[in-house]
Image 1 (tube, rainbow, N blue to C red):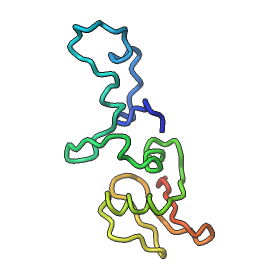
Image 2: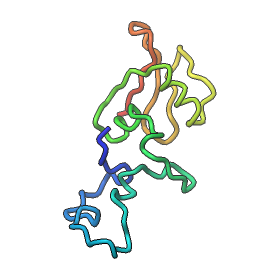
Image 3: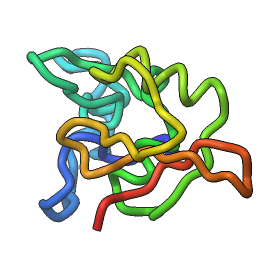
Image 4: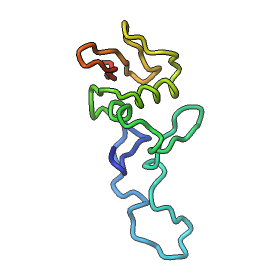
Length: 119
């Protein structure tokens, strides 16, 4: 994941001259943030802010439409079970992640769970 990828907005154009890339204003500046909040993470529901280090890279790649399919590791599966309202991932039928446009299914040939964007 790109360190300065805008995780919050997806539909608007990038800012031409964002405030955090302007010249330094000196020590008397009121705002000393080095990185804008929208690059630090995103809001994930109920007004809760999640930092980019806590987000799953594979889910974010599909969410930002940089990828269509990702092979999940055991850690990725545990992240999905912990952070989404899913009790289990059955191997016989696909399971959708709520309101994300993605689903998880078991691939017998790869012997792994696959995360795919619903088209």
